[in-house]
Image 1 (cartoon, helix red, strand yellow):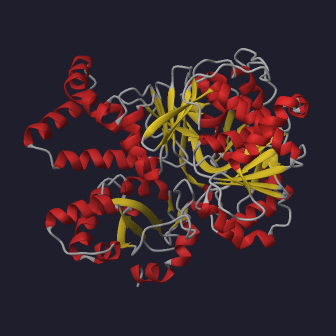
Image 2 (cartoon, rainbow, N blue to C red):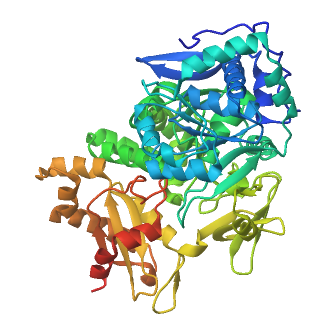
Amino acid sequence: MLDTHVSTRDATMPRGAGSGADARSVPALLRARADDPGTALRVKRLGLWEKISWAEYARRVNALARELIHLGLERGERVALLCENRPEWLIADLAVQTAGAATVGIYTTSSPEQLAYHVNHSDSVGLVLEDAEQLEKWLAVREKCPSVRWVLVVEPEDVPDTIPWETALAAGAERYATDPGPVEARLAAIGPDDVALFIYTSGTTGNPKGAMLSHANLLWAIDSLADAVPMSGRDELLSFLPLSHIVERLISVTAPLRFGYTVSFTENLDTVLTNLQEIRPTVFFAVPRIWEKLHSLVELHMKDANPIKRVAYGAALGAARGGNPVGIALAQLAVLRLLRLRLGLDRVRTAISGAAPIAPEIIAYFRALGVDLREGFGLTESTGLIAIHRSDGRLGTVGRPFKGVEVRIAEDGEILSRGPGNFLGYHKDPAATAEALVDGWLRTGDVGELDDDGQLRITDRKKDILITAGGKNIAPQKIENQLKSSAYINDAVVIGDRRKYLTALLVLDEDNVTFWAAEKQLAYSTYTDLASNPEVRELIEGEVQRVNATLARVETIKRFAILPKRLYHEDGEVTATLKVKRSSIARKYADLIEEMYA
């Protein structure tokens, strides 16, 4: 059973050392936090939220680290993790690092072949799997992965050559109680420049590359993040984005060790909105699609509300956007405060959108609601941090650089950054490393500009800029974000490179279009039926024309096609953070694209 109360420190637990400000490694932060009487983690099991104290968290990390050393894990080796967000992920991550090794996070949506690629490319010697679903992937490819010496399974199955999680923890706890020396020696030997993590890039332009991040990178990142977004032990965070992504790793694993706040895990991706209402976090990070979804849910709910509620909502939003302090206060008190409470956002001090561009209109909407939504920008290769909105963050920009980061714009418009977060390089790929890091400057691949106030504006990905047949340069992300701001459009891919005009491939927001279709009493049985329905097409036509009205003539969408299916990470169509893989979509739907230009 998980600890559901504050635990006392046992005789084998090394005493903490305050805030860990002088820590040389990430797991050293946990040691400094071990005497904290607060709650480190919360997880919902069988309908009840269970608590894990800091002392219990540290004990489990020490126990697992001791067992991994017993299993032969050496300093500098790698261990792969394939698991959803849950306490065991964090415990395994920190145990591997405590043993002086590095962790390799793998997205749970990966196919068996992708699992084999990550394991082999990283030369992982161990593997931590969650359950039968992930174990099945491993069994399909294990003969192709000779480097793996042992496999731990969190929810064990009766499969030979695997070790149940609880068995490993119990054995490690016994060994640590009688002989903690190997763990203490490994922890003491970790240096700031040692590799802590392999974070694999999303692979939008080819095979994923293994970016190596050091303990120094991570320690700098959490301090710089807190400089822009102050955090304390009173904060609470909801963890639901993949822990294989650098920002979620920072805010769910590393930053809590320094600042002592509580991390709660959603039950699964389908319960994010429910768990958000239960936990009511004070700091909330989400990708643009989550913010777009929340926005569309409110807008559609209000369309279906009674006239009095609709008028009150519209008036409150208008007052909040008007800038008059009295009007804003009345709007918040009368309407918007209750709406934030319904969404689970009423306690949010700071909300952050990152991992992909977001439409300025969405940020403006949540700010009007009273949610301090800020946009951040960073890469895996910059430990997730380059720039972020401060309190005066301008819409259409991603704010000013983080503390310690320098930003400049190259002659061709590419954004370059330099700072303590720049990674050590790509594993087994010195050529790609040399291309990414030039004289200490990280080439981001994004095109942008710095305004007079030092705020960074991103116009597009360098490789995504479209040049029409007429020679006009078009930044598709801006148009795509405006299309996705529609409650009825989930994804948009603008096409037009070397073409006479722009077209778009669109994916329906199935929940909202389904609701709309039910009101219209349209007959359908599947998503494909909806996508091919003439009345649905007419609905989407109206949304496209609404966006076109805000664009320059050369930017307008002349034709569009609704894709017959959703986009899936498993199908190689989007990354795990829901960024569209443009080249993959263009290849897969080449015939449909040609029809739009026929």
